[in-house]
Length: 428
Image (tube, rainbow, N blue to C red; front, top):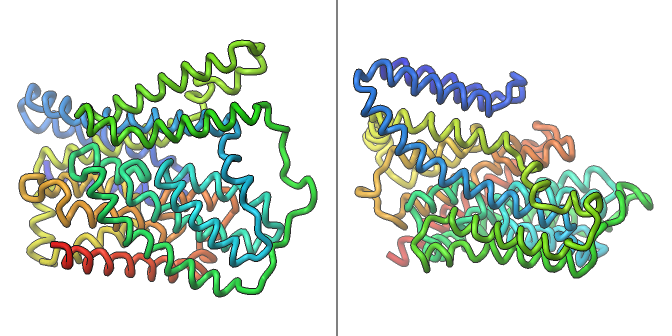
C-alpha cells in the first residue's frame, strides 16, 4: 500500500509542477490525488472507523486554513473594488528608474507583509503598467516585485500562505516569527535590489502614452476609498492580536473582521441604487475570490495528510536526517526545491515530517522553514504564486527571468539564509 500511495502522490505532485505544459489546472490534480489517496488508504487499512476519524482530524486542520484564506481574500477584493490601493499607489512620484525601483521594492515588501504576496504582486505589477512605458523596464520591475513580495510575506503570519499554515498549525507565533525573520527577509530584498538599481542607474522613467491603460473613473469617493483601505488593513493586522488575546483560531478573527467590513460597507452604500453599489458589495467580492486556489489548498493538504497518517513523512524525515544530517542544509534544500514545485505541499509535508514534540513552536526548524519556503520560490518565475501572477500580467518569458533575475534572487536567498543562521547562533 505504501508504495502505491507514494506513486500516486508523486504523479499528483508532478502534474502540479507541470501545470502549464500539461494545461491541466493544479487544483484538479490536487483534488484527484487527495481522493485517490484516501480511497486507497481506506480500502487497504481494514479499519474504516479509524480512517474516518483521521480524515475528520485532517479536515479540521484544513478547514481552519481555508476559512482564513477565504476571509482574507474577500477583504482584499473589497478594498480593491473600492480602489482603496490608490491610497498608496497615487503617492508614488519619481523621475529616476533607480529611485522608483527602491520605492517600489520597499512598498511591495511592507504591503506584502500586511496583505499577501500574490495580491501585492498583482497590485504593484498593474501599477507599473501605468507608470512605465518601456516593456524592458517593466520586466525588471516585475522581477524585483516578485522578490520583494515573497520576502515581505515570509516574516509575518499573514503575508504568505506557507507562513500562515505554520502559524495556524502552532509551529510559529506572531511576535517570534516577526523578530526572527524580518532581518533575513530584508536582506533577501536588499541584495537583488542594490544590484538591479545599480544596473538601472542614470536611466529616467519613460511614462506610457497618455490615456494608455486607463479604465473607467472610480465610482467611489475619497472617503470610501480611505475607509475601506484602512479598515480592511486594520482587520488583517488585528487578527494576530485577536488570536493572542482570545486564544481562538485565527479564522474566527478574520471572520469577525469580515462581518465588520460587511456591515460598514452596507451602511456606507445604503443610499445608493442597487446597480451602483452591486460591484462594491461583499457578495460580489466573494464571487471574485480565487476559488481555484482554495480548492488547490484543500486537495493538497488532504493529500499530504494521507502520507502523514501512514507514517510515510516521518520515514522521509528520518531518511533525510540519516543522509544529510544537518537540519539547516535540509531546510535550505527544501527552499531551493520550492523554486521548482509549489511551496504549499512542501511545507505541508514538512509539518507532517517533524513533530512539535521534537521541534517545539518557534524552534530553529520552523522559523527557518518559514524563511526558506517563503523566499526560495523567487529564484524561478514559476516558483511562487506572485511569480506566476507577474508572469501572466506581463507575459514574462521563463528563460528571460532565469537569465536576468534568478541569480540576484538566489544571492538574496543565500544572504538571508546565512544571516538567519548567524542571527540564531548569536541569540541562542
